[in-house]
Image (cartoon, rainbow, N blue to C red; front, side):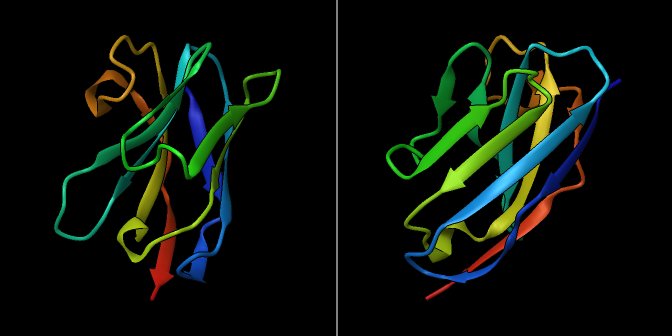
Length: 118
């Protein structure tokens, strides 16, 4: 089992930037990913990284996912944030084939809140 801990969320104004971090402890994953869930909405993919990065359409051009060489730290640099980006952001890890599907991941963090005001 992998333990995941997110950090870096906060309340910002539209157009601002935030960097989320996820620290993994343990082993047993090939891919890591960021998902988000807004109140009343389903959890949706933001980005994933295995050997390469993958992005949901909502993240392309604004967000960048990276991972350190140890693959224990993952980051999500979020630029030009919009109110629509407001959500709880979750880190996930697993042996995913379809890397932007939540069901492909078996380890999840507790989330970090991102709130973007207009």
